[in-house]
Amino acid sequence: MIEFESFAVELAHEAARVTLPFFRSGIGHEDKGGAAGFDPVTEGDKQAEAAIRRLIAARYPDHGVIGEEYGEDRPDAEHVWVLDPIDGTRAFISGLPLWTTLIALRVAEKPTVGLIAQPYLDEIFIGGPSGARLLRGATERPLAVRACEHLTDAVISTTDPDIFNGAERGAWTQVRAAARLARLGCDAYAYAMVAAGQMDLVAEASLKSWDWSALVPVIEAAGGRVVNWRGAAPDGTGQILAVGDSRLIDQALVTLKRAAA
Image 1 (tube, rainbow, N blue to C red):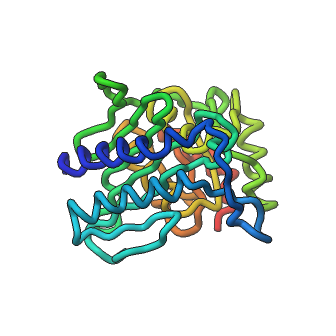
Image 2 (tube, one colour):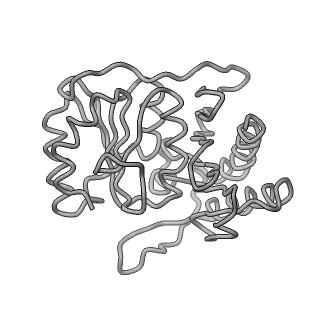
């Protein structure tokens, strides 16, 4: 599996080669959301995913791929790469270095290797069977979550409360009221901060598989947990709860379960 972790890093470097020239360049964007709401996509999203797919096809032609921009290719394969070339496109087009590249490898449908890369900051957070670590330039250090026994002491995050439906928003509001500090708008970078021991909890909804698959191995290899709002493994509901300290799960789910899909 270390082979796949190393390959994921290669993919992240290739994605960075494509995305960084577009960042803060004044690049335009399309709105693919239509009536469902603003959902921007840039040429950087498309070109980065295409580049990653080419490398996967060349190295592992029997592997499947699921990506935000170009859909599914052999999604029932034993090994499936799940890609979001620019998670946080709104941050990307706003010039904010909170967007990330998300790369996961599912083995027998389970996210086994995960990577969260922020190339502008030269950071790669990777997790898998060999552990969790932060790669920055030529340096490498282990990742570990921090202890946080009580929700009242927790630093928590969600990208935007507007992603929630009415019941979900009410549940989030109660969790936020109980926590010490809440930060918004961090996209997947918030999950990297949980793995790095800087934040304690992230709760979100309406996520697709490419939004959350990479997060699971990173956080869990760092000692945390990722579940849905029923406390089970993440699934198609799109409701995600990630914590550094597992003692926070039950405290958050007291409220979140009421809005669980």
